[in-house]
Image (cartoon, rainbow, N blue to C red; front, side, top):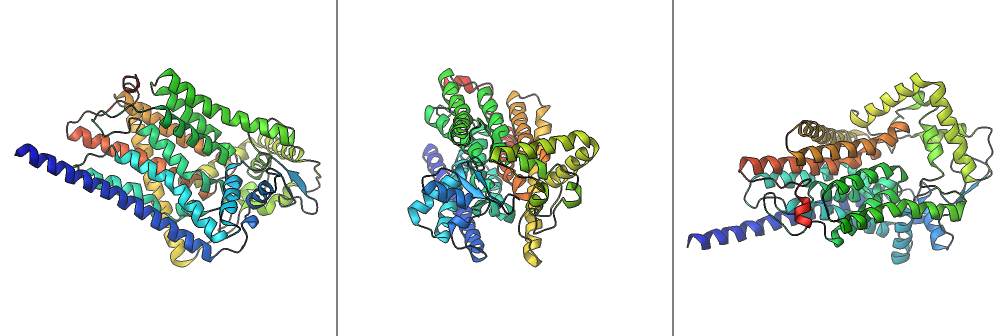
Amino acid sequence: MHNSKSMLLGLLQGRLNRTLLWVGFAISMLVSLSAQWEFNRHRSITSVFELSNLVGPAAKSLLAGNGLTVSTDSMGTEGYAITFSASRMPLAPVVIAALEKAFGDRLTVIGYAKTILFVLPLWLAMSIVWRAVPNTNPVRWFVLFLLVLPFSISSFLADVVNLQVEEGYFFSLLGLASAMIVFPDSSRIGVTGSPAWVPQKAILFAMSVAGIYLAKSSMILVALVFCCAFFALNGTRATKLLTVTLICMTPLLWATHQYQVSGRFSIGTSLDGINLHKGNNAKFLERYPPPPGTNLDEFDNELNAGMHFNNEWQFDDYHRTAALAYMRQAPMQTLHAMYVKLSVAFFSIQKYGSASSTGLMDIAEKIGILIYRVCLSLALACAVWLLFGRAKDDRFLALFFLALVAACTLPYVLGFVYTRHFIVLIYPAVIFLCRALLRNASTLSHVELSQPSADMGKTLA
């Protein structure tokens, strides 16, 4: 009789947990679609091909069968156009072109479709974390709260609904890949689960990491961190080979494509040089951080003054050379600029790099960024604490998280930092905090925590 009651209670608790997970799903999607509705109300364009950052023109070129080729003078070469074939990483234009093919040039519909499509990986991340939640432990309420908390941050939602910035296409892939590393066994803490890195899961992980890079070339350091973290998990040789091959082939294939269409074997883009130059020039500290509602793009003409470029790589080489020359000639100013960028990345609660807000919206944005700051600070403090702990799995996860934050931040410290650049770290931070909460809960309830770095080989064997 006692066993029957226990079984019934377990079933009810399991059903409640599944219901809570679906509540989290519903909240995240409802808030995201509401943000997209609000975003649509203030759009100044009517066609998907008018999307800025060359995303719209690149998508139009794709649909016309011309690859990512765009001729434009919008990169500060007013009066004469440069033909760019390697200016954009492919994920954003490909997604926009595919959605336009499916729904026509209906900007509002495409906005909703893109939002749904890129929230789905976060649902998978939520599911992975939730599998580790004990059915009866009160900690599940805190975990649920953390999983939906990012959707209260307006700057994060701006990335969720945005169609023209790269962060809008990898924020969820970053969360999913992080969940797969931080919760590698995909089973409840203290409970032996099914084999963790079956080929299907390895392929999903590799596709997520590859997608992060294909959205933004500077994220190749993030891809490297994920690759190393996966390699440290003691999986089978076949699984390691499959995953690492898929990840490493991505930049090689992209560079090969670049060579074919633009004449240069490059894993980056032909805009990397000017982005470096924007953050490293004699007037940078006069203009950065940019006043709310402005950005550094308005000074592109000045950076190109007196120059004429025959092609995109000549354009890229000039700006890269000018930036590096300035960094060598003015090392103290460069270090001071990096300090300012780090301050924006880790301490500021002002939104930078996009439209300005006033009144209640401005207050809401600052509160959202403050929430992000608290979550990231707690996660970083926890990681540093665990890094000097005795448990090998704790040290592994702490090192992974610290390396991920560093890899995500470093390219912007070399270039320039906007709010959208760092806010994508909110979901990895939340996932790390969930792991810390669950580990503490399992310790308090005398449940042995699974060992991701040491026991993974036994699980996969």
